[in-house]
Amino acid sequence: MTNETTQQSTNTVLDTARLGTTDLTITGVGFGSWAVSGSGWSYSWGATDDAESIAAIRHAVDSGVNWIDTAPVYGLGHSEELVGKAVSAYSEADRPYIFTKTGLVWDPENPQAAPIRTMRPAGVRRELEASLRRLGVEQVDLYQVHWPDTGKALSFAPGDAGDGSVSPDHTPLAEYWQLMADLRAEGKVRAIALSNHSAQQLAVAESIAHVDAVQPPFSAINRSAAADIAWAKEHDTGVIVYSPMQSGLLTGAFSAERVANLPADDWRRESPDFTSGLAANLQVAEALRPIAARHGVSVAEVAIAWTLAWPGVTGAIVGARTAAQVDGWLHAGALRLTEQDQAEVTAAIQASGAGFGPASV
Image 1: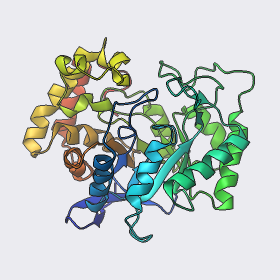
Image 2: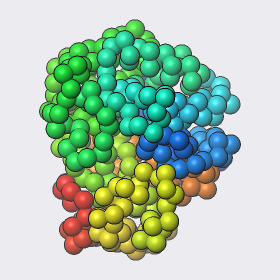
Image 3: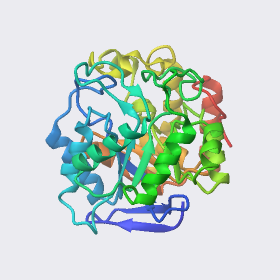
Image 4: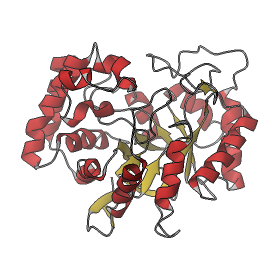
């Protein structure tokens, strides 16, 4: 992170940094809009209140957050519509950057079915036009390939991003990355990125056109993208990580009882992180409490700051359903963890055996 700052109406000052070699300078934390996408689709977080969601987005922006991450598949278009309504209140000069994605297509006749990972060129162009319409903008600031194209249904199984399992009619990476570069050259999008792609896949893409940014999952529990982040750092590619709080597990608000009481349509009920791995994950969350107390911040802010301290990371996507939840993580971008703090997190990861990936750089 650099020492640049952004300040908005609530007098909150947030650190900012340049995203790779792009002309985008972003705050360390950005608003993630998956959780506000509502129910009625696979991978839903449960029912939400649209007015409350829009208020949460605007509160984040008014507090200094200068980018929003969304995707057409979130709520099957609903998340992008909410973001569009939220940002319509701002002038072009004051509007936050909008990052969205492509490559997950759903069946409108069967919204509960898992979306298909596909990057067919004609489909991507249709997706982009639909996103621009829902968002109410003429250009996407960062357009991201959501997952590698396998031609198969999305799943969050280990190795899903690069296990090589594809259908015969999938679109090769070289073809769809050239398309993304073409969209950038045409001015439809300002910068292009790859989400959930391995370091090997990033290298293939880089040989065709520069990868402006990557978006991997990364947290004190899930550290599997460490090699991908290292690749990005070496190639002047920006990194925005998602799930820094591991879908809520590292907020300090979860317990086995709360997990048991999650709504039936909350995807987390079936996730290994919330079932077989729950005890170890909660052990890591507990280790963040004394660190948070020393700094006078929330457990969630410590979890996010830990990801931002990782070399190469530019920003972290953080979700919220209410304005109050935004206040619970807002200052993470300005929090500096000490060597002692870092050592305690490393020790907790190693003692618990939680997740996978290196416990420290």
